[in-house]
Image (cartoon, rainbow, N blue to C red; front, side, top):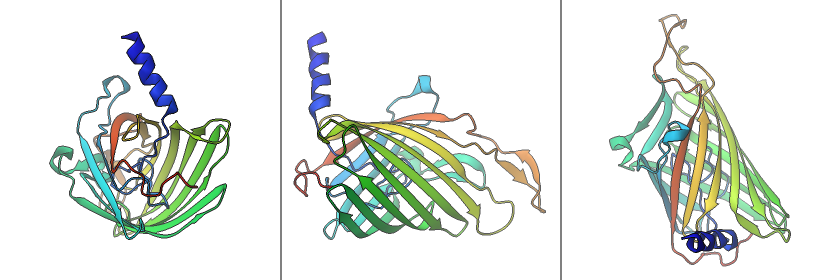
Length: 272
């Protein structure tokens, strides 16, 4: 038994898999923030799990599902998710189809440009997804560095009810030669402003997570989300009255398993 565990750990450390890293809403990126890249490492990918709960109760229950693919030489990304909103006018309340088992909420992302240099990669994309409306994102990635390889994303969106400002980052671990290792860490935040009447709930969140590639076709993702604002009900004049149910001011944890189809990378060796 000990030998098997040791063998698994060795395989994890020497495997250099690259995941698409889907958001809960479908488009590739972090947990909630879509990035400026459209991944070309895998033709198809998806995830299951992701229930937000206490740290002691984290399980890989299929409470969330999402799938993605790409077309036109990885310029267009098409995705479907069972989740379409985390915060609405009723406060923090995750909204899913069929309790998360029906991925029918669509999203599209178009990569405008993907400029790759020896050490720097910059991607520009725009897209549409239910929660954010129309969005634009830019991502800068520093690769081939030893120890840690950072990535930064900024995005803005305009929807029928809210406008969002979003930021995200990723730290990819690497060996001394700059070769990526299977462990990465993410952090992101978002805030919104009402685009319509006074009194609509405005979303604000912080999140962080980790990614561990389990061989070439699986990635285990752990995450934490905190909604620091207390959500209130409002009267006709826009004044706070009572607190809404289901606050997330203390934060919740999640666990996801992402899977990748098309075992041969469409771009050959990993490029930055």
